[in-house]
Amino acid sequence: MKRLFSTICSFICMLLLSSCTSFLPEFERIEALDKNEHRLAAGAYGGARYAILDGGLLDGDHTAEIKAGAAAFHSVGITNKIAWSSIVTAGIVSDGERGTGNQFSLTTGPKISLSPNLAFSSPVLITNVKDDGYNSYNYLLPTIYYEHPSWDKGDIKALVFVREEIILDNEFGLAFGIPTMGIKLENNLPYRPSINGNISLIGFYLGITMDLTRD
Image (tube, one colour):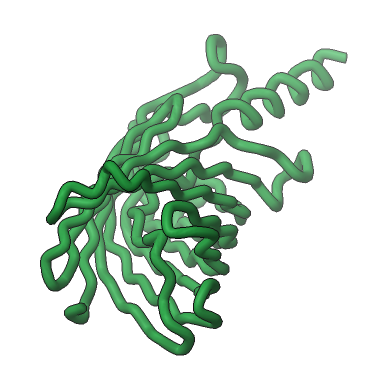
């Protein structure tokens, strides 16, 4: 019974406090690519979250986990409304309990431009951490993007998004993490540099991106 109670508590903790994917820099835009149009971009990210190592939030082992790295992005228009986007990241993950590991990830999936102000994406994230102390999971990341017309202030455009984290492979089966909310500010300069902030209940990350080709 004690083991069952511990397992249930661990599952609830994972369900409510997982935000392992909030480090991703935000490359997407609501606007659609033309069919067969390609977009290339690069970026970087950094931040920290409160990681639960074992047990519960109050009585378990926990630590501050730091992540930082670089990212590359590619998107291609499938139709005038649907694009297929991919992000590759390479960086480090570190905390006081498990030391430092190298983290690699691939995120790939469709983005649908629903209107001039609304878009939806649902990519799959595959992660790999080169250190035995860290767990690696695969995720489905449904995301809603919204941009209000009044937020377009000439050279600066603002975009907000909400991303859910669905863990596809763990000992409990399907599990849902806490949503990540974010805001992205993009400049209309030729390479469209941007900065984004991603926040969840237990973490905060900053990302910067820019296109590799001029508009």
